Image (cartoon, rainbow, N blue to C red; front, side, top):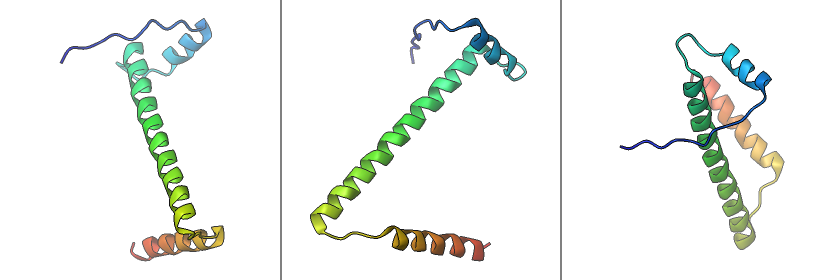
Length: 88
């Protein structure tokens, strides 16, 4: 697979130094930037999917007229947590 380059990134010297200061042994600044980019791409995909599920749920509630109170939802989540704790 061919690789592509990312655009050059201009930052304040203090930010570059802060990034260099936290590099792990053997890690390059380029590897750090690439990892940061990958993590943020995944985060934003996950965030977009979460929002899409929420909007779809809202639309389904409007269509069906079935709504749940926050108390009902929290009680169900508590039950799930209690069940997980009990199975440990």
